[in-house]
Image (cartoon, helix red, strand yellow):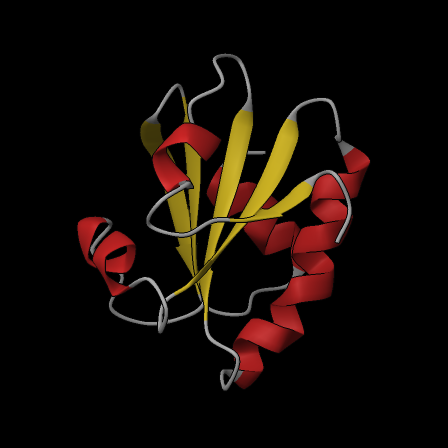
Length: 106
């Protein structure tokens, strides 16, 4: 896992997404979810293109249901853009790169 991608859990999530001036894309996923696997390389590519600005935060919903519930995640993959600790936008589903960039406002 590269520096622009981090795994977060209930103990590390809040501290992980709180660096001012940084954009976090939180990927709510599960290991059994095929659409989650399909979108993973696209998300990694987006984060690699802007490593000084974007951090991809992976949250496994099976292991961290409280975080998923806090963000109202009802289906996966759900991608939430967070800046300054606040949700800015979200995208649901395994979308093509151009649609993800547009929906997340990147």
